Image (cartoon, rainbow, N blue to C red; front, side, top):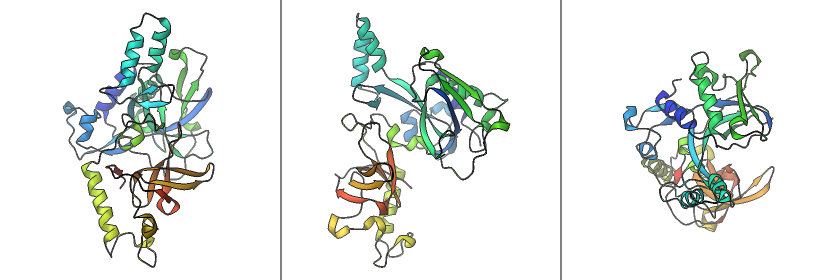
Length: 331
């Protein structure tokens, strides 16, 4: 494994600029294992600011990355990733900060975009031990990087065979003293069993500018990249082909599981379709397909602060066809 050190250097400097990042840790001890993710560089990554031209990095290269920095606004209606550019919340925050009223200035600080560093992690205090995407406040991520960049520890402390990070949170303290980050002794770190697949954080819709779990705030518009277009066309050809590569999933009538109900509901599942599915904990849920692959649909329920559910195609039922638009398909 070889982390992209140039990006880490910038992130380390960036994480020290603003200590007002927010991560919903419980008060007391939190124990997590942090993972890197692999990313194939796209031309759009330079536009989004993931890479700089002077990094001497070319599209098509594959790197191990650690985090994705996302500025967020915490509004009364919910959290929204800063849309950047012509952002109404940035404008309102600046107006409040420039006010002579201390009350307005305080509100401006709360509304101003604060940095969150998203990483793949496993909560070792949870019985599930599933891979999750979580945010680290700026000061916590800076401490994590100090260990990763320290030759005494290095990149070996990351991943399934890595070390545990102990993050103590005391919400009664001032922000600068709210978190204490330590690394657990190697001999006391639990050995994790099984395989874990970290998300490519550079390709997660919920981390894009303008995205919010509150649909009324959501300003994110998915754009179809060249790779997404190739995937979409490949999937379409597979569906249409008599010798499609998904033969294990084809029923006796040569219909794929995501093609069920074609005559009744107007076609295969597509991005933006409204569907319903059953969840063990929350019962029957309804939501919109925001990402789609040959076997899994990522469904946003639209509930405030809700997760995006990854559900097998065969387990969802169409409620309403969505408006056609570009979007992201998973390979």
